[in-house]
Length: 550
Ligand SMILES: CC(=O)N[C@H]1[C@@H](OP(=O)(O)O)O[C@H](CO)[C@@H](O)[C@@H]1O
Ligand SMILES: [Mg+2]
Image (tube, rainbow, N blue to C red; front, side, top):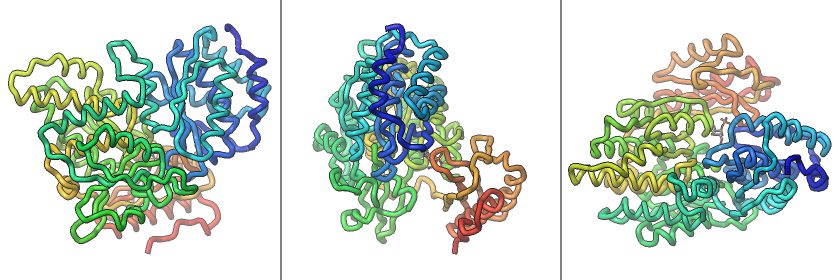
């Protein structure tokens, strides 16, 4: 086939017309909207994925149908590149243009222009693997996606209902099969085997962890964690909660990783379950984010977010690399965003290089790839640790001269197996945390005391046009509107340990204000004063002005 099958695409496309005037944007998290408006988008993404595979010489491309931590009525779709990573950003623009073509004719002509511009060799095969989360709108959207595959003639493999990180794993496993970089068996069984075997090796000789309460957000994490529990058997006792995937409206409702981070509260459903001192964690709706928390002996709630996970894991890896005698050969680094708590940055900076990049997983992931071992976590609990292929080869070829070196090297080798190398993975990260806690003989209290979080506050501001907000220095400084950054600086300087920044959201039509300061009251006050200044500069009617915190 050296030209697009226009007749077939037309037939299918007419079954999936663009009915909604909505503007579709392939953003940080792919397309994400109310599920009911996405039929045409899924069909077109099916075709685009086929073309992406052809462009990548027939390698398998992944597609995940999910809206992660969003409300149950939302849905979305994102594409995964052959190495298991997020779609190349140049294609995000094509995805947006194709999704917004208002008629079949316009869609076809845009497709043709695009094939021409990208010089796609249409005679190449197209291969895709796809999955969805548990959302009720999922089956119909997957059917639209499958029509897209049929229209372009893609060879499609259905991975069923699974997590986003497993889909990423499958993509990389399929594409590295039979190569030196072989990633593992390209099945869910392969994923569970890889994780559980590495976990058991890392825990050998350590006491079995006490039971961990897992809030599955009533989403796809529930069936997947249940399967993982079977592979781990007695080596990791887990108490699964919020597993009601068939209860309408339950997904992410008053539970899940995003609820934990944004409300800084325990899910109400766990109030009677969680014992003081017991570890608990929450996954989000597609199980790529993880938050830990616990109640202290006075019953007070404490949150252990992505920054605390980074601190725990980074210090452990730094010590292992030293113990392996490889500190001069392995360059370790941490990547954060401006949302990382100032105390975490301070803690980490005394141990290893820390880089700050713009918000969004792809920025963190790419920056982490510049290290031999790159650790990245967003404060919201999304993150992973990347071991370069070269370092994995060095580790497996190492000739240790002492027993201690040999043990440390083996631990590093097993960590590279345990940790999902493609994307943040709540279940893999959870096992990683459990390994470090077991090696350190830490409970939550000891882990929490690595450093004390600076109180902070995040406020959303509704403005008339968030596009007038432009930033630099990894989003820490506003360059537009002119003069606003100076006002932010003046206010921040008035508070002990005051730090604040303002940036337009990439996923919502708002501007976000983040502030931290020495006390909670000061952080709240600073955030709301800056939000007020932002609103006065760019907001609309006075009723939407952020209310001063009392
Ligand atoms: C403050 C915050 O949590 N921002 C989130 C949010 O991005 P915004 O661009 O801030 O809307 O969604 C992103 C995608 O899920 C996530 O990567 C990021 O951390
Ligand atoms: Mg998610």
